[in-house]
Length: 481
Ligand code: NAD
Ligand code: SIN
Image (cartoon, rainbow, N blue to C red; front, side, top):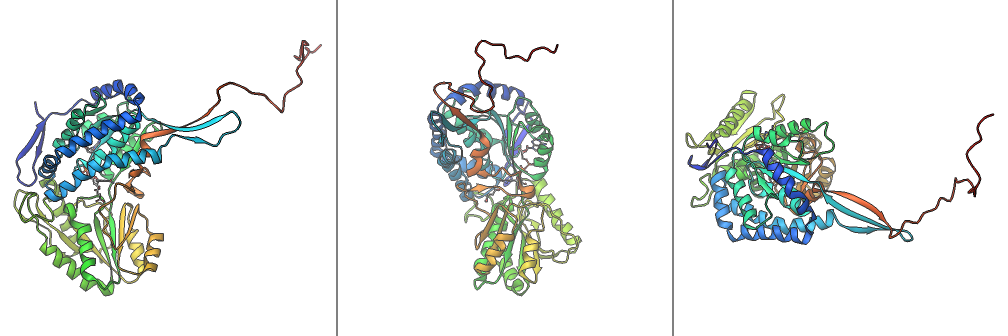
C-alpha cells in the first residue's frame, strides 16, 4: 500500500504516490553489481553516463515540467536545472581526469612508480528537495564514472523527480544493480546509512541531518562521508554609484527559488550612509516580483516554497524576529490560504541582542546596519556556517580585504551569492560541510589514490648493516658454557 505522496505545492494536486523502499535489499543489489562495474573500462562507464545524458536531453522539457510541478519553481528555472544535469557529464569526465588521474611518478632504475585511483564501492546518495535533479546527479554521475555503484534516496518531498532520474539510467541500459533507488523519509535514510555494507554516504541537505550523520559515522573513519549542508549567507552592500544594480543583485541572491538555495543571501549587511537608498530600492524591486505558479504567464520570478508546513514555519520565524525587536521593512505573508506562496519578508535586525544563527530556508532577508568596513566583515563572519558570501560595491581594496578575512567557500564581488558553477568546487566551512567540497571536486570523494612501485623482476640487495656471509660455518652465537 502507498505510504508516500508527493503533492504539487502550487496546486495541492497529488503528483505521485509510492511506497517506502527496502534499503538493505537495494544495497545487496548494488554490492552484487559492483565488481563488474568497477572492472568495466572508464571509457565504457563514461559512455553509459553519456547515454543517460542523451535520454535526459531528448526529454528535457518533460523533466523540466516535472521539476516545476514537484518543487513549484518557475519553468524557466527548472529548464536551467535540466541543463545543469546534462552538462554535469562532460564536467565530471574532465574532473575525473584532472582530480583522480592515472599517471607515472618520477622513478629510478628499473622501477616504475604509478599513481592510480580506485572506486570506494557501494555509495548512498541522499538528496534535498530544492534541486531534486541537479544535486543528486552531482554526486551520482562522478561516483559512477569512478566505478562505484549507487543506492539513491531522493527527498521524500520530491520522489517523482528522483524516480525520473533512475528511469533514465534504466533507459540508458546501465547494468542491473549499478544505480538503485529507495524511496522514503528520514527513517529510511537512517536505515540506509546505518547498513554495514555501505562504503560511504554522499549527502546534500540540512546541517541538522548532516550533523546527525557525522555523529553516526564518528567511529567509522573507514567510511566516506561527504556532507554538503546549508548556509546563513551574508551579502555586504558598500559604496556604489549604481544603487539599482546593487539592489537587483541583493534581491536575486535572497529570493531566487523563493530563497530555497543553500547559497541564498539571508543577511544584508549595509553601510549606514547607504542604508536608505539601498533598502528603499531592495523593497521597491521586491514589491514588483511576480510570485505565481510555475507555468503562469507572465513568467513568475519565484513560485511557492515546498509545502504548507515550511511556509508556516517561515512565517513563524519572521514573527519571532519581530517579537525579539526586529523592525519589518516588508512583511512576509501567505498569498493564498492553504497554498505555500509567500511574499518575501525583509526585516531590520540591527537592534536584536542575539541574532539567531540558523538557516531560514526561504524568502526572508535580515538587514543589519554597520558603521565601518571592519564591522561589516565581523558581521559577515558572525555565523557558524560558511558557504557563500558577496561584497556589492566598494573598491578593489575593500574586496581584497573582504576576500582575505571572510570565512566562506564562495566569496564574490559585485555578483550574486547564488548561481554556483559546476565547473568549480562547491562547498564551505563551518556547519556548511565537512571539508569535502562537491561540484568539480566531487571526483575527490568518489575514489581513493593507490600508489605502486613496480618492476618486472624482483632484484634487491642490502648494502649496509649486513654481516659478511659465512660460507658453510655456523654463525649462530655459541651457547654459553
Ligand atoms: P534534509 O536534511 O531535511 O534532508 C536531506 C535528505 O536527508 C533527505 O533525503 C531526507 O530524507 C534525508 N534525511 C533526513 N533525516 C535523515 C536522517 N536522520 N538520516 C538519514 N537521512 C536523513 O534537507 P532538505 O530540507 O531536504 O533540504 C534543504 C537543505 O539542504 C537546506 O539546509 C539547504 O541549505 C541544503 N542544501 C545544501 C546544498 C549544498 O550543496 N551545500 C545544496 C542544496 C541544499
Ligand atoms: C543550491 O545548491 O542550493 C544553490 C546552488 C546555487 O545557486 O549556488
